[in-house]
Length: 181
View (cartoon, rainbow, N blue to C red):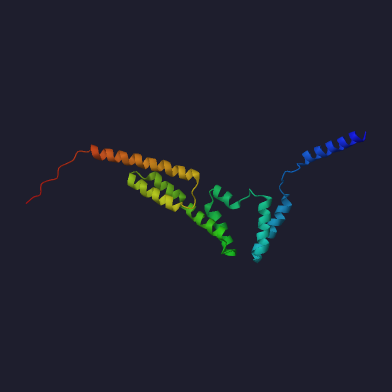
């Protein structure tokens, strides 16, 4: 009887643990997160960097996937993300991470124009110049997808140069006029 009672209690605890999600991490309730966000911004407004840093770390631990700046960039709002970083740099002017983000976002502002210049280039020399501008202009924002695009573009440059060379060879050579005396 005692053995059955222990088995039943053990099974009950096991079922409770499964239903409660024992061992799984859960997000904090919205009210707790909101209170922490409010305290974080109050600390930033008052210039209490120690408190703001601590609260920011707690917020990140609560929801590590919530990256506001990345969401703005992914939504195409590079200017908005840059404005957020600029505001952060007003409060923390020596923050290296914010400084690096600012540089990357400034480069991203010009990404659309650089890629458009690559697409509109017709000759191999214009294509090479556009590629050089894009690789320099996006040096801090290299992704695997961008690197693959640049690799494919280099192949297009080589193909275009080969066509240009073949066209130059196929054209008849016109003899120079004799110099008049």
